[in-house]
Every structure is written in C-alpha cells, then in structure tokens.
Image (cartoon, rainbow over all chains, first blue to last red; front, side, top):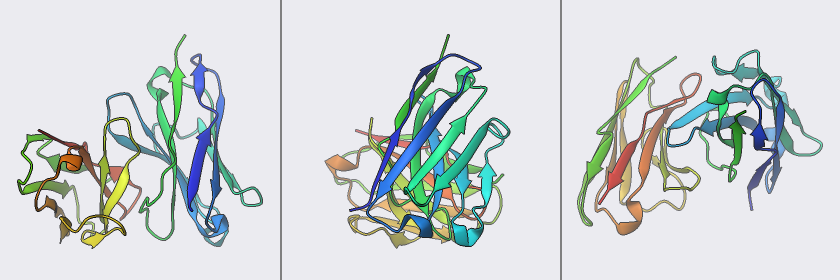
Length: 120
Length: 105
C-alpha cells in the first residue's frame, strides 16, 4: 500500500526555520519525483517545490513565492523527502502536503498533510 | 506561469443532476490537465488525469474532456458523496491549479 506521511509542522515565529519530512512506503521511492504543495486556511492548492528522481538528476524547481527561502531534498536510502523552510513569513501558514509523480506532475497519492503556522 | 480559470467557482445542485465544471488555461497545454476532488478537511483526490483518463477506483459518472485551452469535468448524476470542491491542475509546465469549484447542495 502506497503511503506518504508528513511530519515536522507546528507553530513557528516569523523569520524562523522549520524542516518538514515526508516518509514514504509501498512504492519504489527512487523511481519517483516528489513535490511539496500547500493550502492556506480556506484557500486553494498551491504547488511549492519539486525534486526529480536520480534519473532526472534530482532536478529542483520552486514556486516564486518560496524561491531562495525553501529547499527541497530527498534521501533515497530512507525513502524520505524533505522541505527545509527558512525566513518564514505569516503568509507561509498552510497545510503542507507531499505527493509523488513520474513523468508529468500527476499527483496520484498525497500525504495527510502537516500544518505550519507562522505567527508571533 | 500558466493560469487556470475555473467556472463556476460555486454551484448549487441536487442529487441526480448533471454537473459540468470548466477550466480554461491561459495558453495551450495539449491534454495535460488533471482534476482533483477535495472534501472538507480531507486530502485532495485525483479523479481524472491527462484530460480524460479516469483514475483507478474513481466512479464512471466522472468524465473529463478537452485539449488546448478548454477543458471540462462532468459528473453525469451527482451523488451525495460528490459534494466537494473540485480543482483543475495543469502538468504541461510548472504545475498550477485553478481556484476551485465548490459543489454544494
């Protein structure tokens, strides 16, 4: 059974950092690209960042709103994807989801999400 | 970035109704358009990928069509469990989502 489980969310002050983890099982993690997406309270879905598979040279992409503040990475030996978030802003408050994809960004499995609240 | 505009953003319907939601892309995206359903407080669920392909396990009352810039999601006979928000998403380039369409009773 494919599973993705996010962790690491919580309450953090503006300007601080937080690292999210996406622990996966039930599929060949190394064959998939991974993305982080988010949903602010009462708002729609927003793509945040993607990392390619090794075959894709682990290509990195970021939304303009998080570029130079967030960093996505992966550890294929542990089947985990990470999102390192720094210089957090109040507008980063959202539920953060991880999801997998292959050739096209078709998100067929999602984690349950982890809430990040940026507030003083 | 490719912008996606959904319409309507909200609609009221009854059980048994045929419901159609449209998604318009700011430029051509071939057939690289996906649809998701999200119920309140739940995780998004993939319904349709690449415009018209039904994801495994999704009821056949859901269908999708379109290419280029104009796409539709159709629910042939609305069921009680279909009341939710629906999002389109393009996978032609850096992914973007539509603003969502809320289907309510």
